[in-house]
Amino acid sequence: MEIFHISAECYPMAKVGGLADVVGALPKYQTNAGHQVRVVVPCYDTKFKNENNFECVHWGTVKLGNFDFPFSVLKESTDKLGYELYLIEINELFNRPNVYGYEDDIERFLSFQIATLDWIIARKGIPDVINCHDHHTGLVPFLLQVAYKYEIFKHVKTVITIHNGLYQGWFGFDKLHYLPEFDLKHVGLLEWNNSINSLAVAIKCANAVTTVSPSYLDEINYSANGLEELFKSVRTKSKGILNGIDFEVWNPLKDAMIAANYSIENFEIGKQKNKEKLCEQFELDASKPLFSFIGRLFEEKGGDLLPQASALALSEHFEEINILILGSGKAEIESQLTLLRNDYQGNYNVFIGYNEELAHLIYAGSDYILMPSRVEPCGLNQMYAMRYGTVPIVRRTGGLRDTVIDFGDNGNGICHDQASVGDITYSINRAVKLYDDKINFNKVVERGMATDHSWERVCQEYIEIYNLIIEKNEI
Image 1 (cartoon, helix red, strand yellow):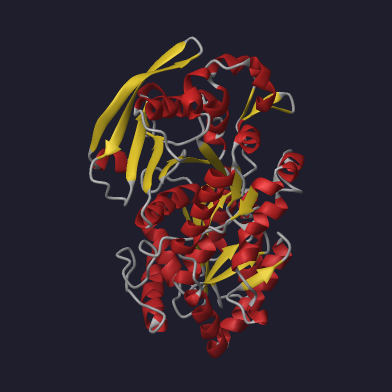
Image 2: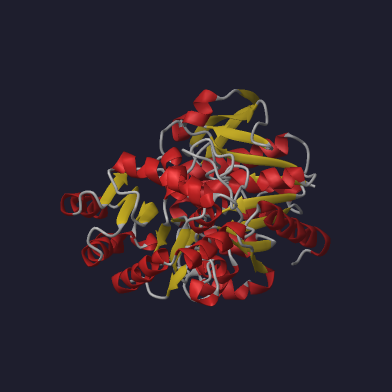
């Protein structure tokens, strides 16, 4: 089976969040399963692009209304990622350091989608499945069905995988002329609430809709930023597939980014060495339980709750616990978290920004990871944490509900129900008591490390969906 994945992110080429990790891992396991897999992402100005070898395999011009943008298709020469990686190079639009956040993002990702399809049709081969990821690629299923120049692809099966349904790629009908020509009787497929909604278009036109956890599929029927009724209407072609993690990248026994390697058999010794390294770096006490947070500092992730929750927990457990924050986001939240260092020096620290190597060390050296998310379609941090023997403290939502079971129910973590300061501090209190009970604490750690979140299982679920839509046009 020939499979294309089209995405705005792919680790290690470009990463903002979990989307990149999924698109960077799933294709490798599909390739290992015997399929021909190609991943297509924009050519950003990133470290991976600049440090690896690429060859130009196609060039052309993408037309966006009255604008013409020359583009090239670059292929990573060695297939070092375990699959074929292609970059759509449109220098005028993508030769920038950031993935998102520009005023012309609509034009950027429209041109990316059109250039990708122009290249695929120029190859003269017809893929079996095109798996689109989030709204940045949401117009692909529509264009394959109705655009005149892609008519040869009208029977190619498409899947839209929704990693976060809050972001939908809205733009006005004043930009309709950007799209390749199509019969205007189909224009209704583009409309949702009087605008063009890229995610809604994909949901309507794709042969299958997947979300990155079963619970998130349930939740978006009731909370989907205006698309609730649409999600309900396509439930028969929808499935929630829980993400996996790449056990080759996230392996405490072989991870070169951490201070000491370890496995489930010797995690106490290994984690303590990593904890000592981490605490030395951030001037914390390695004899105390270490609570960490890794992620974006926005309301969606509960980042706005962290300053007050941290202050209350540190006051209640004065000099008994450590808290370490790694993340970036809203300036106000960053400022509040930074100011806390003045009051709790020696028990609290923060790193504003993101550092992949530091993230690995935090997973390896922490006792607990905090995830008080308001919205968490799947969540990967809790899986990374458990893999490294760090106990997740999570709010029951989305994929967190599907992956973390409270230790009171013989589970692998600590759970609470509300995204509130009170629930976070109550869970920290429970965690402190559990930490002092080493026998039970170690059992929770072991259950987490033994949990199977590998991509092999997830890969097969995607292949089953592809086969169903190819054979029966339904799932």
